[in-house]
Amino acid sequence: MQTNWSNIKLIALILAIMGLYAFSNQRNSRRNIVKMKVEFSGDENLYLTEGTVNKLLIQNYGGLKNVPKEKIALNTVEKAIEANEMVKSAQVYLTIDGELTSRIIQRKPIGRIEGKSKFYLDDEGRRMPFSANHSARVPIITGNVTGESLEDVYVILEFINADGFLRKNVIGIHIDEKDNYKLKFRLNQFVVNLGNIDSLAEKFSNFKAFYAKANKDKTLEDFAVVSLEFNNQVVCTKI
Image 1 (cartoon, rainbow, N blue to C red):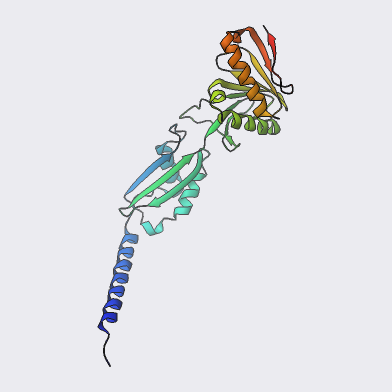
Image 2 (cartoon, rainbow, N blue to C red):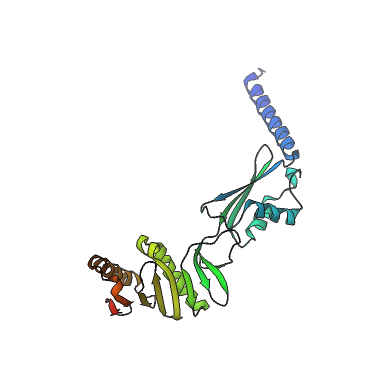
């Protein structure tokens, strides 16, 4: 019987590769963590610092440096970081040279509630605490803050943030009561009565047409109240 040396060589090569891989994997798993790194993705405003993250890990694990890599449950570390109220999501991974990297996406505030309770409203409509490290420049929400009215405010803020003109100019939302909302603008003294959140696209389109004309005519400072509550109309009250 003729020996098929080509097949034998191929099998030997595969076994050698598997052995080297297993040996390398075993050596890698025995290595200790030599360095920790924190990266923040997205918004540059840091509501959470690298020092805070490291302190959080120390509180939960007593420090991770010099801990064998095979003893680290990455999913558990991610959940510990995500438990922080400033964190939207976290990804934790180990590099070949023993660096434990935590890549963090922070929550993003879109409104600041100033009432009996003070907190941010984030871009998912959830409450977010203030940070000692950074104060967000977002519209201030005042008035009759309730769970229902905050749901409406979130809809209004989403609309504002999607529009360059509104995002630049609206600095506050006042809640008289549910279905009765007022807007405050950065450079103008008048109050915009928005009413409820129905037909927001139409209301803001009419308002921007009014604003452009009044700005051209230099009459913006003549108005005390601009009402968008009525169907397809902008009703103004002069000072």
